[in-house]
Amino acid sequence: MADNQETESSEKQPNELTDSAPILPRTSGVLPGPNTAPKMEWPELVGLAPDEAEEKIKGDMAMVQIQVVQPNNFVTMDFNRRRVRLYLDPSGKVGRPPRIG
Image 1: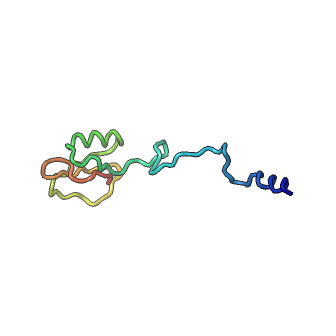
Image 2: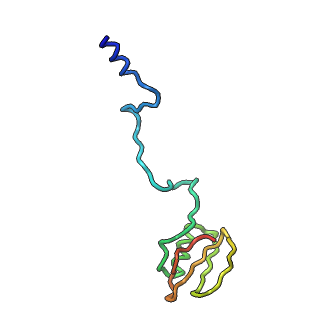
């Protein structure tokens, strides 16, 4: 009877982990690759000069149109997937995160 219990416990159940099953690393966020969605916002550019910010954005999205917006200027409310606005603060630096739109 002891032999019978031993064989039952040694049988593998479906979806049971074994010593040979690889353990994959956990990831957070999106994995880079060809199916990755394009970048929509650049919070790391706040505080940079507009020229520097434009260069970095064009590095991520070459065909985007950059529009520099001076402080207290009005802009249209339309959404354009090929436009990124750089809102400047009074010192002439990027004042808020640039994003597509």
